[in-house]
Image (cartoon, rainbow, N blue to C red; front, side, top):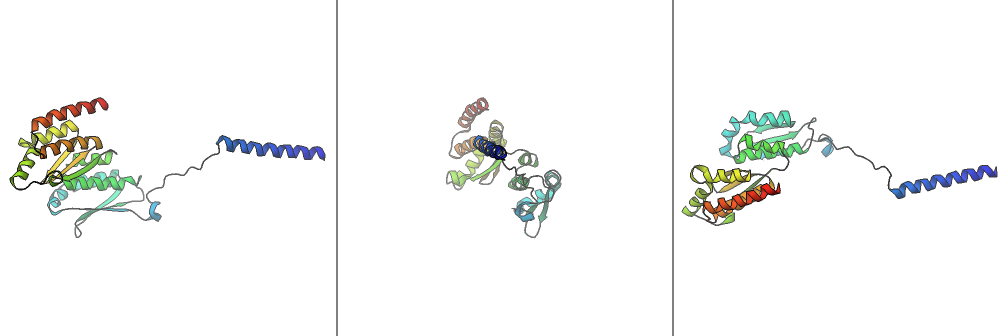
Length: 225
């Protein structure tokens, strides 16, 4: 009997020391939680995004509707419709939406088209994660009125859009100049380079000086990446 008690006590001591060793080593299995599906988030309720459409973008939106609808509905698995009464595009998650971030990507895609970007450029927002749209106005950089404002807009575009295309190609961005508002589509670093060039033009720098600075910055970026 005493031998049995000693054996059981030794076994208990061994098991407790083994458990302590596992805890001390930190090899206890951690719980693994699977990613929630969009249909399981927000208590199963669908999530929405609404993108307002200004009056002057109604006709282009109507003309390019199928080019917008196809990637959003078929590839990203997001419901989309045009609310004519409220004048906005409405997006909603579905049961088979693979990723909840698709909803925001689609909203950014539609918003980029509404701002004036081409479909071919805006659709990159659906495929790449590190693309953004940055907007600012000329008056944010310098207060200009009358002919001074008109000349600043002319400097930004250049003859036949030459200056704008040069900035786009060297910084790998896309730029929309809508009256006094400027929209830039690209990665974070490239947007900063393009914005600095545009701000220099607004402040009165000649195009040649901006080109030379762009060449130097583009060469630096090429070495870094």
